[in-house]
Image (tube, rainbow, N blue to C red):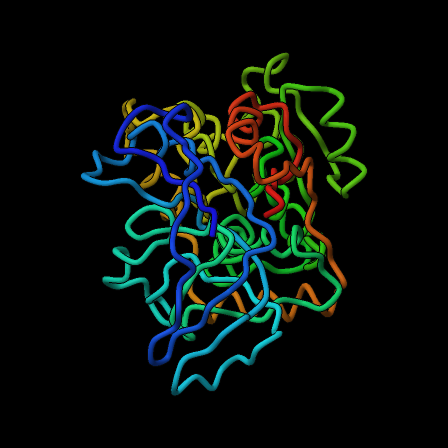
Length: 333
C-alpha cells in the first residue's frame, strides 16, 4: 500500500510517499481502507517539529474516514463494509481525559494518511449515513473539539451567545453547533468576504479584527452583559480580547495556539470576572458518538473548503498554512 511519512524534522518538505506492507488485523483489530482525510493546524505544528522532536518517521494526520475491509478475531463492534472514522485519542473511550494522551493519531502513534490503517475496534465510530467520506473525515478532531467545548463541558443552551474566531475547522463547527442549539453567534475574521460567508452560515454579528483591533470590546458591546462562551483558538495573541468579550461568570475554552506558544497572562482577570478558563483536548469516543447523533438528527453537513488528491498531500498542507481556507481542507485517498 501507499502511505505518507514525515521525518523527525524538515517541515512539509519532509513529507514523503512510501510503500508499506498492507496491514493485517490481530485480535480485536480492524483494517480500514481510508477514503479521505482532513488536516488540522496541529498537523502543521507536528510537521515543523513544534510538539517535540521525534526519533523516527511518522504517518501523519489524525482525521480520516473509510470502510472496514478486514476484521480480526474477537471483533464485534464493526463488520466488513461498515463506514467508520477513527477517534482522535485511541484509548479515550469515555470519562475524563486522564492518561490517554499517548495514543493520539498522527502524533504519538501513526496516523491515517495512508491507503490502509489497522486500529483497535474500540477506536472507531460509525458516522452519519448522509455524510460523504470527505465530510466524515472532517469530524474526529475539529468537530469533536468544538462539541466538547460547547456542549459536553460548556453545557450550551438556547439563547446563549458564542464568540468564534476565524474560519478554520473548529470555529466553523462551533458556529454550526451553536446554531443547532439555538445560540447566538458572534464571529470574527480579517476578511470581509469570509465574514459575509459566516453570516450565511448563521452568525448574527461579525467583526473584522483587522479594522477593529479591540474586537473583544466590540463583542461585549454587542451583548447585554458579554458573551457566554468564547471558543479561543488564537492563544496568547487573542486572550486579552477574549477576556474583554466574556461576561462575568462566562467560559473561555482554550483550544488553539494560532498566535504562538509565548506571551504573558495575567490571572487577575480570571478572578475578577469569575471566568471558567479551561483547556480542551479534543474529546472521547463517547462525545464523538453523541455528536454524531446530533449531526444525524439535524442532517448537518461539515463545511469543506477544498479536497486534494492523495498525490497532492504536500500541497494540501501548504494551502492550510496559507490561511486562505474557509472550513476544512481534505485529501482524497
